[in-house]
Image (tube, rainbow, N blue to C red):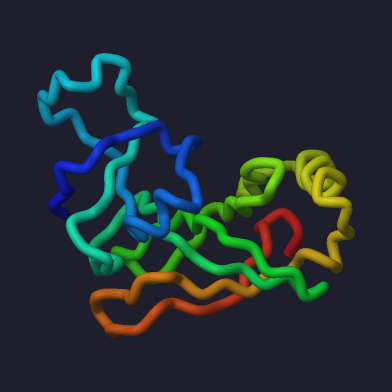
Length: 152
C-alpha cells in the first residue's frame, strides 16, 4: 500500500473529520521520516485513495454504525482484509469521545463501555456497519454485522 504525504497521528486521535477527509488509514511503518519525532507504532496515515485495499492489514476504515436500538454513529472499523474481511474492533465516535469495543475485551470492559453509552447489550449488539469507502476487490462498500467475540 502507498500512503499519502498527509499528516500522521496516533490512531486514538482519529476524528470524524479525519475519517471524512480520508476514509481509509493504515499504520505507519518506519520509513525514516523525521518530521514526527514522537511517532511510534500507534501512528496512522491515510491510504493513498478512498478505497479499501484488497491486501490491507491493520486498517482503520470510516463507517456508519446502526445499533439495534436505532441509534446511528459515525465510527471507525479496525480490520484486516488480506485474507477476507475480519473486524477486530469498532470505535464509536460519540459526543463524549471514542468508545472502542474490541474482540479481546473482557465482559467487564464491555459492560463498562455499555454503561458509558447508557445502553444495554441488546441495544448495541449485533451492530450493523457500512464502510464509507468501497473495497478494491468488489468496488462496493462493505456491510455487515459485528459483535465482540467474547459476547458471541
